[in-house]
Length: 463
Ligand code: GLN
Figure 1 (cartoon, helix red, strand yellow):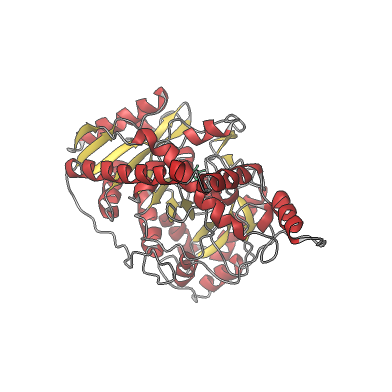
Figure 2: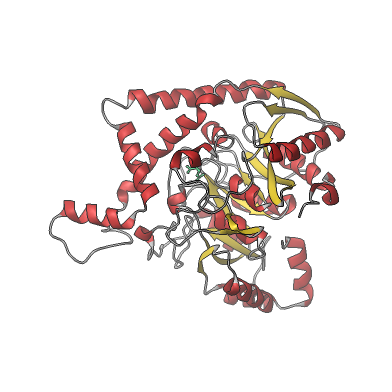
């Protein structure tokens, strides 16, 4: 993996445009399928750096952007056929911030179609392969954004997380990923899947780099009505924490072995650990899928082939036109969710499903609030297993169940990150660290301390 520090050190003696050409060459030969589109302006931006005309916190650093985040004049497809030729006329807020800070936007990363999935297998452009094992998935839905970091195809990347889509690929690819408190990063320009749950967030090879990117993208933006109106500045703090291990968030034995090792490390650093039970989590996964699909069904109504993307030449009736555009433009998983979401919201069923799910959402929030009275941070394995084989999760329900440890965080809107803690059977394992609203500074300090103290030789010995 390439850290910001390493990239900057090379920049002292090499030309940025040469380094970028080398990176693009590597991407050209790559088997990962992590990018949907590469930016033709990247080299030009690198040349600006060489002429000392590019300034900012990310000057000359190659950053990859998930393909559901709009980029002006650069194709943004959501990995869907229905948007396969969509070129946005505007930048997302986070992309504006990247440009302001001198980043080189190298390209757009592959993802599950409209971010619906856990493996990037629902992408119209094909699956993303895991750099640690090409026969395995990189996770999802931000599979491309995870793989580019682990596969040396970018230094930093942005993903989005509705129910785990940053943390899952971070865990499967052995990189760091953070979903911040709901509202801290503007969603302006994030093509919506489920607005009330999702956030854009950073992915990187180490916690320092993650912090750097998070400081750039978090901040005030009036164009997103749910924006918290504040930014983020990291401050180094030494504090012994009360760490709660969530009983209901478990994993397969090989992952648990690594998880338990990291608990030992945490205790050896002087933090105290205890177990906490969250009763509402039994219903969290079901509630998440009802809410996410309901919001998706409403959000995706806009794709009618008139304003964006996939269109047809013939028009005999509007109804037939819309249904054909949508039948051809959306993949199976997206259609399944639109139908289930419409059903959950329909008269007669609304109270039975959607309202019930909202009530569970409140219970999940309450459980977290109760836990944060006794503990400063909460931890769990990020995913119940290591990366799956491509095609292994054949039916949708099995796939949905893999999100059991990540979705409660989005229901509550609290921040959580995934930190690599070693390998099980040669595949990366992630530790999920959760904190109360706006406690990013606390969880990032904690993650930094764990990262610094992980015995690389021991924890990562199975590479
Ligand atoms: N796997 C979850 C879903 O399909 C989460 C996806 C995401 O966070 N975008 O809804």
